Length: 186
Ligand SMILES: [Zn+2]
Image (cartoon, rainbow, N blue to C red; front, side):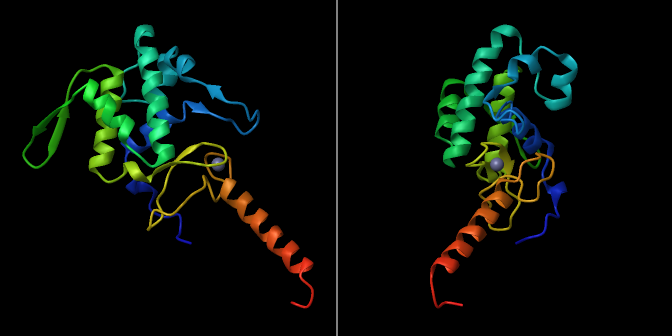
């Protein structure tokens, strides 16, 4: 198990994408599917805290933004990028070549900005490190060396959930039961 060091390698794009994707969530306390995007969009302050560099959507931009979020969540859940590609086919962005880097340009609305963020994560090799926990569905960023983390929050940190630890305890108890049930293996 790798250490939890290296949090600084995760750039703001990753954290904002996670915040965006986790505007749909199943909170720890209620365990009910919860949609927070409209409320977030309704508060300039909350929006700028969560998604500083994504423009706050106008009410008429909200339905598209929700569809994009749901599609990107589905891609992350499937370890895929086909839905992202479909969005880009419908809403092409422009690639410009700077001195030393590629720059993406396009319309300034929130949907286009999120699309360009997603493309940048793909280009940086980071998209496939975004994962949805198979238990609580929380989207997290896998910082493990070999990109092998499956569960959210193995060390119950900022998300307050520890599906990995819970699964580990479950596996240990199962193994104990199996040992206890198998005679003569002590
Ligand atoms: Zn989880």
